[in-house]
Image (cartoon, rainbow, N blue to C red; front, top):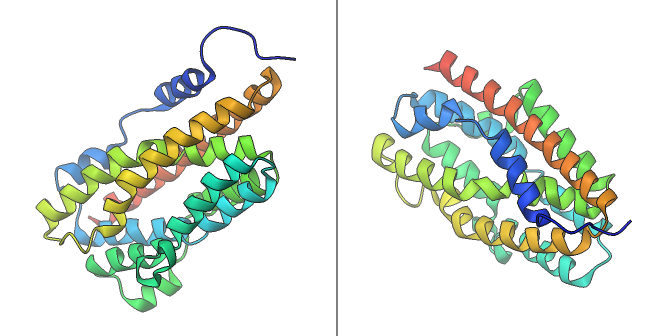
Length: 231
């Protein structure tokens, strides 16, 4: 069935984001410098467990995508995740550098045990990007994750430099996402709107987004509680 006229589909997706968005308690705690460096280190170690397989999420969407213009965006995203060919700028290497600037050791980086919510986050992303349509995967990752990153990471980078004494080099992982993810999210929305051209496809994409936001919410709450316990 063809898409009915009415509100643009991108606006329906953004409405879901707005409905699900509640003030993340860790946002204010970081902004005000209320968490200890130990707490932030633990937070970053858990985050690194999601960053490491992120390239697999993007690759899964690409493998399921039959459209060249969408493939080009995904290939560009993957290239950026790998540091555009510079191993020292690989995103996983950069988040490891950030974790070390907060006190993490090499042993901690390679032996960190995931929270149950971290495992659930990774497993959901692998499933939605590998087993579902490319539109569902792109909606979950491009809208559900990347759309909100620029604002959060910009604040996080400022706070780490102002309140915790980190350098611009230390927070490079955060800074490079501000421009990159804003661009990815806008282009992903355009691709999704183009190829989710039936109501059935749109409903599946919206369901994927809602599930992604639920998984992210569980992860955020677990991280915040872990940080409180460590502070």
